[in-house]
Length: 485
Ligand SMILES: *Cc1c(COP(=O)(O)O)cnc(C)c1O
Image (cartoon, rainbow, N blue to C red; front, side, top):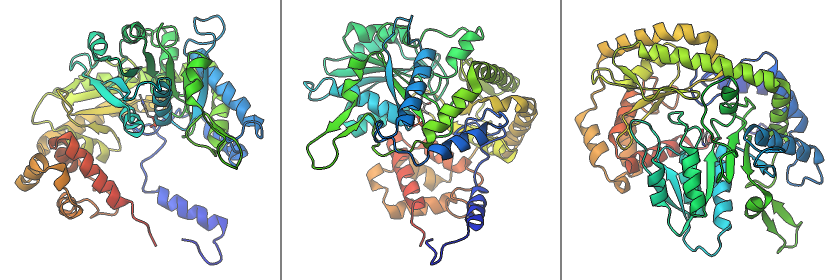
């Protein structure tokens, strides 16, 4: 890797481009997860130039690099203004920080709530089952117990009364999503915030996904229920700029209703001989690149831009949902209310995991979601503005892929794999057992880390209990992450 004399710049870039050739397409509106593409000409070049301008600036010390402080404050102000805060609102004192992503925003929201109550020895939090997995990660990292409230299989939402019942004297935070990542539904935030406030507990609204689309959709006349600081009892909100604000990766905003609520977020330390450290977020040294890129993106797109993109996205969602409705054997998990289309199969002969492969073979990359509690396996589409010009092609390809799926028939897992998936205790999954399993599934056999057809892998995971799913994934990624010499 580290050549004796180093390589010419052109050659290095060629290497990276060659590696990138194996990736899924980040642009073009055919990848329904991971990427958020507005398809605005020139925006990538602008964001890249802005990123380069500030890449070496260090966010560690806002007094040394006031440019970052200025851009951060502008991003926080924009997010707060969009989400019911600022002068003339019921939340005039909103403050916030720029973080590296939704996960960091959620970890900090949980840490802030936990550290606001040093007297609670064993803090807990209440999160709907549809809440993002990052809440569980935060709970795990921070040793805050997680009380999960089930969601209805019909509405995909939690019952506020069940949320209320889950609150205990040790509860430091109650969460709601607007919208949920998995299904794109907006939780009953008003009711949840009310029960939290009544118990004297903070309420975080995870708007990582919907925070930058719902306000624009509302302005377009869509019926968006209250979910932001306009709702009494909402104490903090997270919104990812690297999702629907269409900024390059590495930028989210965590907002608090007022500065006092934020104070426990900070980490200050003077008990060492180096500089006095004061960190608002998890990272200490951090690049100005993502912040500058997000700043440039917001400045360039403006209100008109975001409204236009929200309109395109809304129309794409409607078109994709129509395409799903037109196929017998498929059912929308819920009527789309934001930017997700999510469907399941009502016909045992129509295997969704095979369908996902058939769609991929036709250039459409969707995200399978496994069965969970009483929710069936389903297919998730994150829809962004770049999908709009592709919608007309999706319907025929979906119909075609469904026909191919029916004629292929459902995945039949070999008996011994199925037995392993259902009976194996997670602790019994040694690396040796996993390697046998991986070989049986064709993992690592082809040119890429996963086979082109993933239906068998997804079926196996789907058959496994959640604890075993987790173990299998740990072993799999552990196998992928090996140094090259
Ligand atoms: C994406 C997402 C997160 C996590 O964000 P990352 O940027 O991937 O860390 C959290 N909550 C919701 C609702 C999300 O959509």
